[in-house]
Structure formats: C-alpha cells, structure tokens
Length: 164
Image 1 (cartoon, one colour):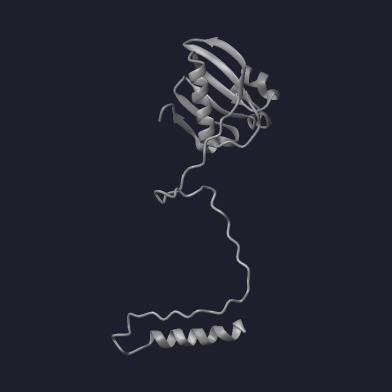
Image 2 (cartoon, rainbow, N blue to C red):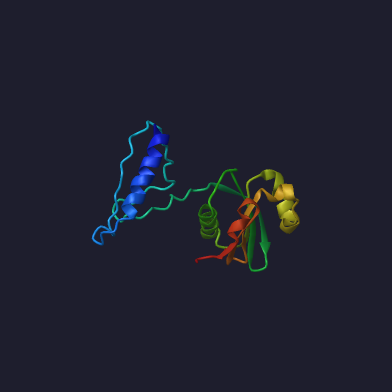
C-alpha cells in the first residue's frame, strides 16, 4: 500500500509546486499519511529539562569517597597519593574531588589519584614512569597546588587551573 502511495504524493507535490497563480506560489500543501502501525522508539535525554527556564540542567555531581594512602612532605607542601573506588566519573566529579582533598588537607601541594591499590607503589616511586597497564588506574593529579591534570582514561579533558 505504502509503495503505491509514494508516487501519488510525489505527483501532488510536483503539481502544487508548479502553480502559475502568484497568490498560491507561497503556500505549502501538507499531506497526512495513514498510520502504518510501525513502532518508533526514542531515547530519553541524559539530563532532565529545567521546567522553569526551558534549559537542560547538568547532571548532579557525584561525591567520591577517598583514602589518603601515602603522604610525604615536599618543598612547599605535602604530596598525597589518594585511592578511590573504581568507577566511571566525570571530569567535574574528579575536579571536585581534588578541591575537596585540598580543603581537607590544606598543606597538600601535589595530589595523585588512583583507583587501584596495585599501582600505589609505582605512583609513589615515579608517577611519570608508569607502564601503560598501570596508567589506566592513574586518573587525575594536582600539580603545584594550582593545576588539575587529567590522566589515563580522562586524559582527553587536559588540564584546568584550580578555581577556574
């Protein structure tokens, strides 16, 4: 049925477009096709629209529990290595984590965040010399108390200045 309807609709649209009457030249004719019973699906949006402003609200940040697994004094402040549970976090989640750590540890100058205790010794010894396998567990770090640098699976987010 639908295959027979397509040529008829095309012919009607062509005829409507070729009118010689100047008053009808700017009008459009819409045809309603019969419901074929085909199912349609939609994917719900990842965020919920704000009913008052018509804008989309950002997702709520996640609170991340952490453990300070290593602390060593360094010139100008302390170096911390922090362990969090494995999971999927946003760049905002990790940025907020670094800020929380800084607020709770005001002497922290450098902070390394990992999600596996298996890489703790390697990160303490030389965070820049990790193997590719270990680097996937090294998520983010604070450098010099001023710059948050995303690493491993979050490397695409680059770096941001604290407080920006």
